[in-house]
Each structure stands twice: as C-alpha cells, then as structure tokens.
Amino acid sequence: MMRTVLLGLALGVSSGGATTMFMNPLIPSDAPDPGCLVVDTKYICTHTFENDAGVFPIYSSSDMVEWTYEGPALDYYTSNITSWAIDDHWAPEIHPSPANDGTYLLYHTALTKDNKLCLGVAHSDSATGPFSDSHELLCNNDAAQVAKGIGFIDCTLFVNQTTGTPYLVWKIDGNAGGEHTPIMAAELTADGMALVNGAETDRIELIRNDLSWESICTEGPWIVSRGEYLYLFYSGNMYDTVHYSVGVARATSIYGPWEKKGDPILTVGDNSSGFSGPGHCSVIEPINDAGSNADGDYPSEYAMVYHAHVGYDGSSARNMLLDTMVFGNDGWPYMRDGTHPTETTEAVPVY
Image 1 (tube, rainbow, N blue to C red):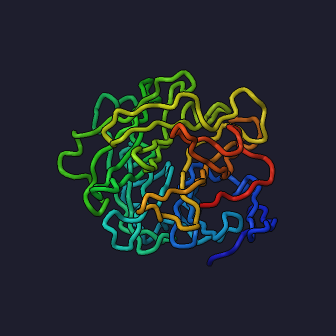
Image 2 (tube, rainbow, N blue to C red):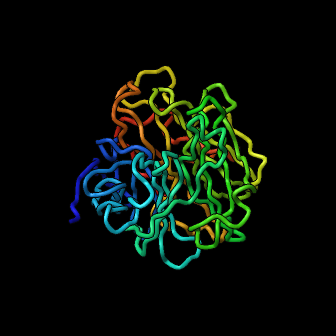
Image 3 (tube, rainbow, N blue to C red):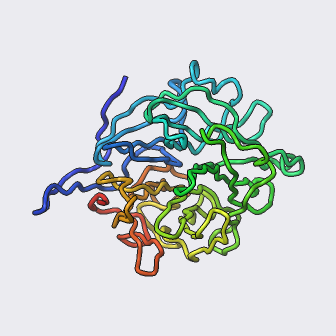
C-alpha cells in the first residue's frame, strides 16, 4: 500500500509564482546511496535498504519535499532476486531503458551465492516498479582480485546521446584488497540488460583514486552530458568517514581522456557541520522542462541528491539530502550555496 510521508519543509511564495522551499534532510532516516530520476512531472528516488517487504524502497514526489512511498523495487517473491543474490544489496539506480520502449531498468550491487560482490539488473514497465527478471549482469572474473575480496559495485548507466549506445559504468572495489579503485565502463546491448560480446575484456578506465583527498577510494559514478562535455560525478575517500566528498571529472567522450577538477565540489573537510561525509550523488535536471535540451538549451540549475551522515560523525545514519548545482563560466560545476551541505531553508532548484 502506498502512503504519503511529509519529509521536508515546503513554504514560501515569490512574486513570480510559487517558490518551493526545502530544508535538509529530504528523508530523515537511513537512506544511503540515493539513485534518482525525473519521469514526466515526478521525481523518483530509491536507495540502499531492505526489509521484510523487499529490497530498495521507491519514493516519488512532485516537489522534492513531500514524498510518496511506492513500495520496494524488488520483492522476494516475483523479482527473481533470491535466485542469485543473498545480501549486500547496495546502490540502486533506476533508468529509462536505452531501448526507448517506455520501460525502465534497475541497476544495483548484490552479494551472490558464491560470495562475490557483483552487479545486477532488473526490468519494469514502470519507474516505480515492481521490477522483475532480476539477474546477475557482471562479476569480477580476475581470480587474483577475487581472492582478495575485490568485487564490482556502484554501477550506473550512461547513454551516448548521439549514437544511443549504452554503457555500464562501475567501480572496481579495490580498496577491499589494498588496490586502487578504478571507475570502469563497458558497452551494453541495446536493451541495457547485458554486456555486448567482447565487453568482458574491452573495458575503459575512466578515472582512479590519484588525488590526496580521495585517499583509498573513488566510487559512486554518475555521468551528465552537457554541451561538448561529459561530466563524471564521483565520491572520494571512505563512506564511513566525515571526509567522504563529491568530486567531478570531464571529457568529450566516454573514452577520455578524463580531466579532474581537483578539489571536491561538495565536502565538509575538517569543519564541524550538521551533516558530514556527503557523497554518492545523483545529478538530475529539475522537473520544469526536464530533458528539453535537444535544441541546445540547458538547465540553469541541477538537483544534486546525495547522502550524508547526521552530525560530524562518520558512523551515524546517512540521510538523503538535496542541494543545487550550477555551472560556472569556466565550464565546471559548482554548488550554488557553498561547498558544505545546506542546513537552512533553501529554494528547490529550478530549470
């Protein structure tokens, strides 16, 4: 059964019309690794969580303030998830199928029955689920890495807007075995449900942890296409520390070369804050005319939805937060309201 939960603060009217306001957090409970998208006039988000109802709760909203719980993305009885995965259901994302047939795909991480962290995919006729035909999509077959406990996690979908070619983008979980953590990509079939022949070996490394603030980890990739560039948003450092932060790199092609901006664009660093360790973000266009950039028109603002720990404490619950991102004259993205998560009432991003 669906239920509506008021999770934020909505108030305020401007002279030009209604201005929706919010105050973080959007979801004031444990909601890590949010994956969000816009479908028609709705924002839809899911996140890491499971209970007796199923895996990955889905919420919808028309304003990013009042959210309706739609149910689990994967239930244990009809989704097929229990046929191959047993635990560690992480980092879900819902995307329109690259086949452009009006259906949707759920990409995620899961621990398989042979104790490997792998990437999975499922299918639905609706972005709010339920999803079915859940199956293993990609596992690490490097025996030396598998022996160290290094799997694949944190996958996302990127579709080339010119050719329509879909790519799976993911993290090699090298920090689990004392190695680097490359963000990789490989071509998918047209329906996004499998890798193309040869993609098991024909893979692209986008970036890896090579900046001091990233420490032992880069993860949580998300790609936005704007103008001549692709922008890869990622998280660096460790999720269970206050130093987890969001960085960005850019390239003119998925094949690179990728140039990192340098310092993170969303972080709390060594400064105490009401929230800490911001990361694992989705970057989406606001609902107003979302997706209307075919003629070269791009949003003035983007919604960055991410998780952060409550308080200056890397062990606390990770709530789902929102802040507004803009692009500067130098072509790089910046957070509209500073590099820290906002703690005051702010305007929801607009197109």
